[in-house]
Amino acid sequence: MPKFERHIFICTNQRPEGHPRGCCSPSGDGELHRLFKAKLSERGIRGSTVRANKAGCLDQCEIGPTVVVYPEAVWYGHVTPADVDEIIQSHIVGGRPVARLIEFRARTASL
Amino acid sequence: MPKFERHIFICTNQRPEGHPRGCCSPSGDGELHRLFKAKLSERGIRGSTVRANKAGCLDQCEIGPTVVVYPEAVWYGHVTPADVDEIIQSHIVGGRPVARLIEFRARTASL
Image 1: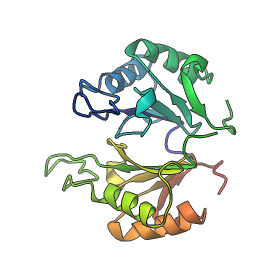
Image 2: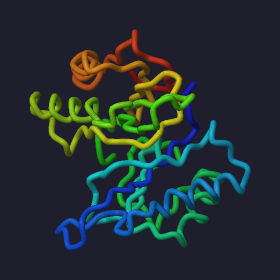
Image 3: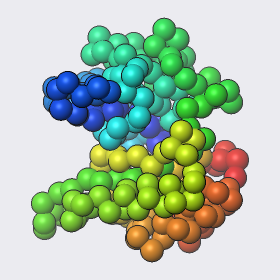
């Protein structure tokens, strides 16, 4: 068995202001990660089945803030706090990734 | 296409000394992550195909230091710097996960 049914990695990398690549968490407050955790918990989705995980730089700064969901390898870009509910409802609960936010995905993803 | 062929997450979470759950990076120096990056680079494995990524707490502190490789969802526990070469050679290069270090794995992993 996999350890988690879904493992959501949220980039929380912070770079100094003015850095040419920018970063996914300019404020450094990890708001996106906190929101994912809080909203999963509100829906009663147990942390033992779906985990919202802080990640260091995912190296996709140009499309940040970046979130990747494994094992499907669905990559979301330009994710805002307003998108978190939709990602959880559509993808995590419903199994339908949010097409408008997808930047990359595995060809073999069984979605 | 997936963004990375393999995405290695290395827990770099640090907790205060004496914390009951311990942590994967007591020294806080991220040595395991640095080693993975350096050794992948030494072998000429490009960061655009395999990424060694810092992760926040992976919530498997009891078996830490913890490393998880996606998309296969192979979880390694009690990983030491001495194990990094073997994980890279056997799993990342050869496609054969290192059985002696595996704690969990997906039933569907195509390995």
